[in-house]
Image (cartoon, rainbow, N blue to C red; front, side, top):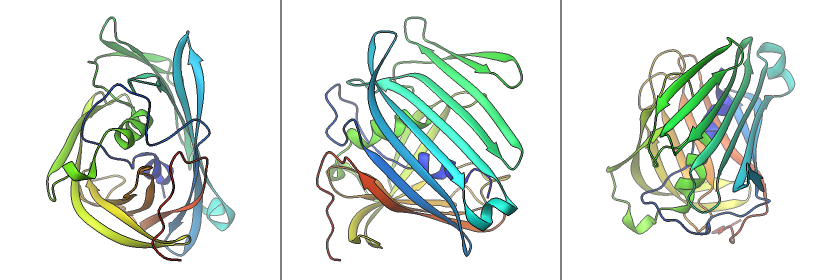
Length: 259
């Protein structure tokens, strides 16, 4: 069940960059996901977006939280918080925070992005260490990528079996290339009704958490919001599924085909 909240925060998509007011989201947006581990209702995860300023820079501040609930918490405790501060018009991340406790496995990391120096300073608060990484203007962190990607792609530009590649930094492993393959369109049954979705296959690192590199599948609403609807993953032990369970403050109409 380790890193189950990570899967929700991981799941969004795009193709091209544009410096403009976001069309896919607005301040006040709130999303809630119910995560199932086998037959257990294992976890709830939320994403909340607000407008703020960071060192006089107008930013969006998104907070992602994941926490096990009920019987699952007896077997495995998860209490995760992810935060990102990213530019309102350019989507560039300026600060990223990752504080997790997953069955005793803990991390407490902050990343500050300096575009004048083309550097990112990662501070590991738990181990009292710092790391420098070279970056460019196209770098994203785990959460800023989610909103950048939602806002900057057109479904008309997607080609089945072709992949999107982007640079990402969210941990002390350094900058890596995030790869996402488009699989086509699919109708998904949800608690809200049937939703037309864009289906994707993110490539992940196999081993300790995921069973294989192609173990993760996600579905994103094929409307102007581009919100994650469902995520499935085969883990090294067992499998999980995350479904959209609640939403508020969407910028655009959530298109439901049939209840």
